[in-house]
Image: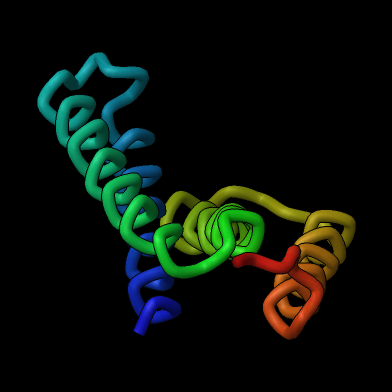
Length: 109
């Protein structure tokens, strides 16, 4: 259940990224304000998740998968360019997140 909530927090955070980009540096104030609200919701979800899961695992997963998802959104939605080094780096990030979630995280008590 918590990992599903974590996935939701990641997606919500990426929606915030999209909204922030669309705000054009807060020149479109409505979208800038909406981005802040979306990020606040993502952080609320994170606050619920870290009550149960170790913060090291939660934050690494949220930021790592968020980076990959944001990059994919940039490529497909905003037509941003990437290269093999960026793709390889994202592969390493995903590998790190997988290893962390399969027992490499810090113990919690």
